[in-house]
Length: 401
Image (cartoon, one colour):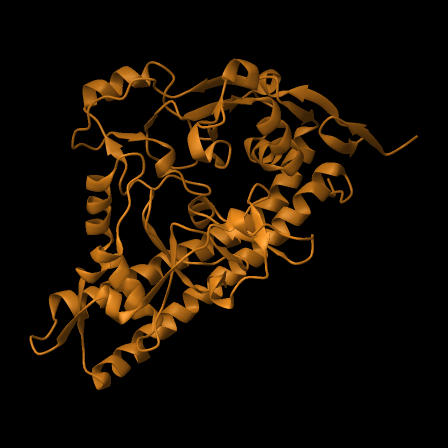
């Protein structure tokens, strides 16, 4: 008798069964379909924009009145510890799935679904199930409606097929994958601390304690801003000489199996490498040091470089002016907000002497190098986890119980 069986979710061990998400859930619902007026308070109303890989970032989270908050608590709009949360609407549909383990009591907007499992089903294990390639493919092709604005319809979503197996085996598989996630999370948090330290030094040197005699130059003069290609005009000619296309969504979420591809036969300056500074100047404005694989720069993104100044210097000046750029973009917004090159000409930066810049560089460059080293390690661990996940779920790699 075979040790494995073929199912709609792929090859699984013969002692597993196939059920549905609705069968294993005590509750499958979404957040509030009404959005109360924001009010300064301690009562958080989270949306997809506040979701990270495995937690909520409450720094810019909307807050509402206690009265509105209490009303929503009564309507199953609040996750409990151990609930699986899924981004179910918009550009991040099904990209973000994690188990809620934060101490804060919060309410959610309807763009986030809540899956509360019955006893006997481990939320960490089923989170990995929902993130696995086969299930993701099934969900996106069968349970998501809309093309311009993708959306999960929960009454259908309850039919998503999932494996049913013993709780002990669920926990054993989840423990292996969680050990990798814990290391990834630790490195992310280290990087947040290092980035905060670098930002503090920059503000101290150039904003709070800047010297009057320092020269001023516009952002456009301290760095080069290369706009990307219209990559649809550069399709891959074969399956070997091609690279993924870096778009605004990929800049935020990383390259995925849903990313587009272009030929690798483009001018070298349009190739983006790990460690390059990328500035999204349209739609969702952001500045990021790219931490992913080699790819091709798409339009609406600048690759930022400089022959005269270190990376941290022009990166932090871009970050410093970002809030103003976002305000300019909002004022320009018709169908899609953006900034113009003229806005870079008006964003002024102060320039210390060469001797002072060298001393600053000696202090801040090691911080940047550590961040980039951590980022590479994160990608390596993520690749290991993502390679191991389907092997564990298919039974190719079995766990000891």
